[in-house]
Length: 436
Image (cartoon, rainbow, N blue to C red):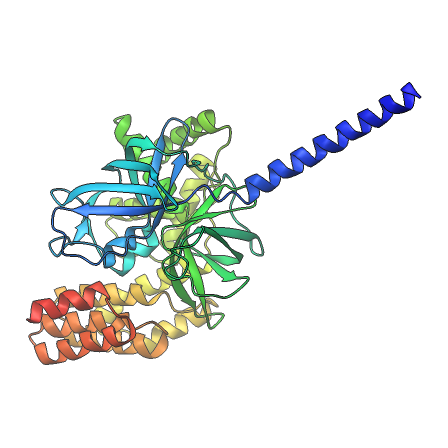
């Protein structure tokens, strides 16, 4: 009888242990105590208060605070034009929405950049990373995932939307589609209005950070809109630059490998580094060293072969980069009138790829404007608007081109057309202010 009782007690203990482990796993996978909301106090208080969400990360030797960069699109004073808070900010807090007694006071903005203008390109680098001055919260810092998200993986977006801002924090599930440059494209499992979720952490099944809620992008190949969260590629770039500054080192493949070794020693793993990130970090430096203005598939192949030979790193040319390289090699010929839009389309078709993102065309149009090639810039933007679906942003760039050549009436018309489809778009708002 005692023996039977002993066996029964052991069995119960084993079951309890399994249940306990299961409950712990569920707690990890469904942890909602990871998100905060911003409370931004500028010196000038005349701004629209749409502050977004935020969270904190553990990078091994420090805890840092993170939110989205495009919070500045509408939430900034009028004299703020770049990613810099110098002389502008009074105090930036993050707090737990349903318990304001838990809060964090932010310190220095690590990735401040007076040369990075506030605008559309921000969503490709949509992280603001701060030091923490004071932490009065019990919020859980996230670790950065060491592995890349794969198509079909289920991921979680945790935070508050405008719709549920007075409710408990919610987890919004989505399925990963694929990467497009810095963006991880997603399809929500339950489509719903997620406006206001910007800046919320995006995590995998292990509750590790894989991205930040950012924007939407149109996939030309799939002919569909997808949510485009900003992946951790740019975040790793910020952390590497931060490490360089702290250790008084310069950017190179060698110091990047040193950084990855340091990161592994702190965190127990070395993150997967994508070809996209290697390219963003080092390809343009190589072009400059060779006195090459525009990239091409051939010089990309030469650069990647040198990286493989010297460092054993295999750089893969994906469709996103291939499209950009073809576009870059076409630019010079378009400027001189040697090539037309049809030539670009033929080159892309020959490489079985599609047009790059509309913002690449828009930025080239601004380059053309600085060269006083206004009509070429206008033709380019009209072509862009016909070929690539967007939310009206192209008209803001078209307004800037018209304004640059002195046609204020056409500029105003374009800015207003942009605002009809994209209310509050900062570039159009700024353009109208210039006209006034």
